[in-house]
Length: 302
Image (cartoon, rainbow, N blue to C red; front, side, top):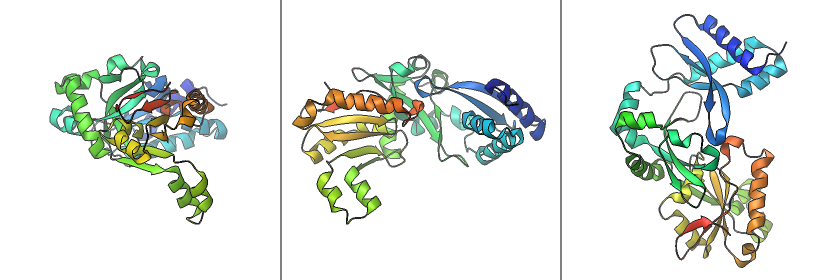
């Protein structure tokens, strides 16, 4: 009989404890993610390590509902744990103010969608944009390409750092560690279908994707010093910015024909956000933004 999610989590914890033995701590909890998304996750610690990966279980539970095989679930969770247990992050390092301030980065989130968690973490609201900068520490793991730890008020207190200090270091570190990457849709399409695709060169409007080289939290690149200014120079016009996700934004030239279609563009962004094409956790905003090449202001387009 297929178990409900919480019953499934309880049994998974019991089975993992039995399989690994008494030298491990195993527990599950509900974790608050971006945009109010709640995920159930299992943490396993061998007691010799102060940091352990959180294994989110929604995908594994969906596979279990198809197979009904609990043994495969336990095999998968233990395999993921073993691949990711050596995260190279000790408690001593996390407590080290100077090391952490050299590592801290920022990313963008939707302010309204995250109003439940923002009071508990240092952040900087971007007034008038409906966005906030939050801070995180990235680290490499075995199986995951990259994992991260959100900076919360407790960590800020341990470091004896102010919100302003964290912001200052994150603004310095992020462009250096997550360098900007901008490419045209024409260029990407022609790389896929071949340079002989002259029709693409002739018919596609100049649309650019702005992200970082890692393609992780790349929407924050629009706050890097000089990035939008350089893009506007390249276009020879102001810009409309469509937030496709927390990982990237799309840049359009603010030509006269688009001015009357801003509401249409915003409706398109909102529709995509609700279509399932973008995971709920990765939605940034339903707004379209406008960057003025003359005043260098970034505002919600109207």
